[in-house]
Length: 202
Image (cartoon, rainbow, N blue to C red; front, side):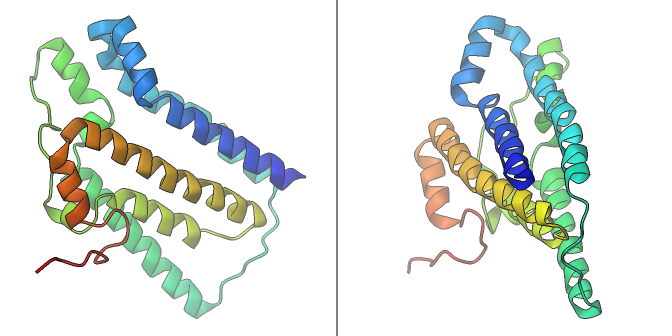
């Protein structure tokens, strides 16, 4: 029963997290808040963290029994994958994406008139984004499954993996709306999550 509760809590968090950044909700905020919607991204990040931390703690309290113990060889492989996933995540975050926009800082700078720049004017194809369209999501999935020790980890990882896949597809739709045919062409040339799975046309 507790694992069903864990699954429902995490699914609820994912649903709320997705809704708060959905096209419909953000368009509504843009209409209501007008130029002050520039502060929403920062609020979204803060509320996501505010809800995530107690959820992680509560899940750990419900289930603290370790059921998976890795041997030395599997541990080495696990640490290699964890290190690779962290490197991929932070490389993409700091070099391939605009981290200031992610945290809402650039939007606030634009609002204050300190900076007038929209980093999403064009599709980035350099670095990891030339190999896969969503390297941070792949890195997150790898990291999650390498941190599996308890039954609750398996439950949470299943929920989050499904959420990442669904969320990635929803984000793809938003990007097609934003960039149009240019992004459709990018989709045809670069795989979404698994690198080197696109066959180049001759």
